Amino acid sequence: MDFTVIDVALVGKLLLLLLIGLGPKIALVPFLEKTHAFDTETKVRIGRKMVLIAVVTALILFATGALLMRLLHITGGAVAVAGGIILALIAIKMASGPTEKPHDDIAAPVDPDKLAVFPLAVPYLLNPVGITVIIIASGEVVSIASAILVTALILIVGAFDYLVFTNIDKLAKRMKPVTMIVSEVVFGILLTAVAVQLIVAGLGNLGIITPTAAH
Image (tube, rainbow, N blue to C red; front, side, top):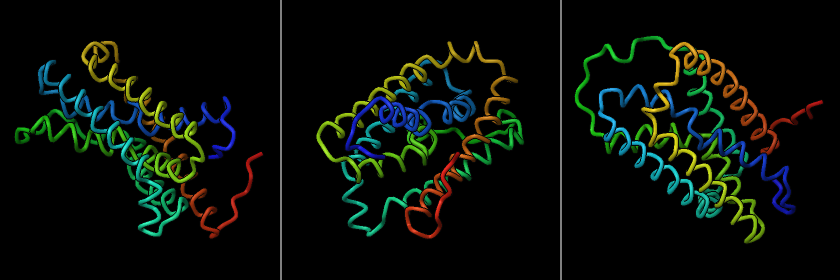
């Protein structure tokens, strides 16, 4: 990402990446599956805490990402490859479709507060794409204006998440199970492609390969 010139293209690209990396899509189905046994009030509490944890974590990563890369002697390319590998694991699971009925198993009671933190806040809401983009952006911002831009977009996406997950029961009534399964598989395939692209970009950044420009 080139922050030397802040224009519509940069804002649009960054917003799209954050919607993938911090937006509700990847977390939506896991949220519905893991909170189905709770009442509406508890679901709202889980959603509220999940969004808060994800956004605060994102802001901390943005504030400290550049420092962490220096301390650990890692580069943006290494971060991209690592993020791509983890994202691929999540995306392949999504693309494979449901393999079991999530509500048929008898499980021990789950602590809603712990559930909101893991796995819902991280790695589902703030997923590998978001973590990768935010850490790389942290190392590449060149001015106060670019730092404010990234922070503002994180907060905007977080506000959108808040609206979705604090109104989840209303939204769930309008979602058809078949449509959700199909969209999950399609999005999983697209995310797998994003994961591959992250890995390729990271390897290119590390000088291991020379990516071919898309035509």
